[in-house]
Length: 356
Image 1 (tube, rainbow, N blue to C red):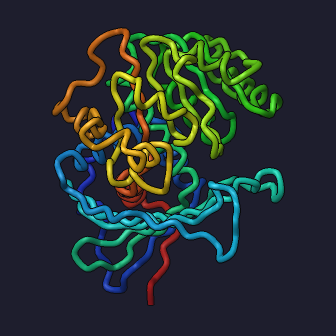
Image 2 (spheres, rainbow, N blue to C red; image 1 turned 180 degrees about the vertical axis):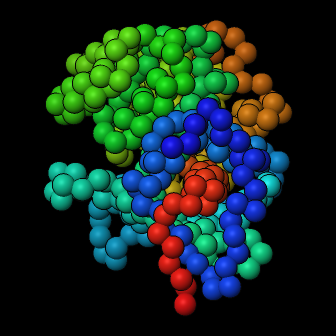
C-alpha cells in the first residue's frame, strides 16, 4: 500500500517501467487501483493540481469530447457515452482516452452503477497502448478532487458547513474527499429525492467521520441555504437552485452542471470553469446564456488552472459568492491514470497482457 501523503509525481520516473521486446498492455481493475491509493483523495488531488497547471500553461492537447447517443433515442440528459481524448506533458508525457458510458436509470432498473468506463493510455514516443484502467472509480474520485482543489482557493477559509444535493456514488466521493482534506468541517446537510439514499450516505460517512454532524434536509432549499460550500451531485436536466437560496460567501461546486438557475451565473461575484470551450457547449445552462447573448468569455472570471498556478487570485473577501462550473476534462482523467499507472509499475501489480 502506497503512503499517499508521500506521493510525488516527479519521483516516479520512466525507469520504473522496464521496456519489453514484446509490447505489453497493463490492465488495472478497480480493486488494484484502490490498493494503490485510488480510493482516497490524496492521489487525485496531487494529479489534479498537475493537470490544471498543465492546462493553464498550455502543455496539453484536448479535443472537444463527442457525445454518443443511440439513434432515435430520446433519453435522459445523462444517457450517453462520451469519448474523452487528451495528451498531457510534464515529466512523463503520454496520451489517452476515457471512454465512459452513463444511463441515469442503471441503479433502479439494472442494479448497476450509473456510469462505467475504461481509460486507455498510450506511450508518447511510439503511440503504442500501454495500459487499460477501470474508469468508474477514477472518474468519480477525480471529479471530487476538482472540488477539493477548487475549495482550497475559492471557499471561505475554515468553512464549517457543506451542503450536498444528490446522494449517490458521486456524492459519496465528493464528501469523502472533502472531509479527508478539510478537518475543520463540522456539519454536512444532505438532500436527495430519495430519503433512504440520503440516510444511507449519512450513515456511511458518519462511521468514518464521527466528529462531523450529518443532517438530512427536508428540501434542496434547506440544504443549500445552510452550505458555505455547496456541491450538486444530481442527474437533473432542469435548474432548481435560485440565487436567493445561496448564502453570502458561499462557494458552489456545480458538479452536475444543470442545477443552478441562469440568474446565479449573472449575479455571482465570480464565475469559473475548468475549460471555457468544453463548458460552452451541449446547451448546458452556461451555453444557453451565451447563445442568448447574456454571458461571454469576457465575463468569465477565470479557468481553474489559472487560479491554481497563481495567475489570478481566488477568493478575495469573505462575502464573495463564487460558482465553479466544471464540465470535466480528459486531461484530468489522463493525469490521474498516469499516476496510478506509474505506481502500478513501481509496485509491479496488475495483469500484464502481451499485445501479440
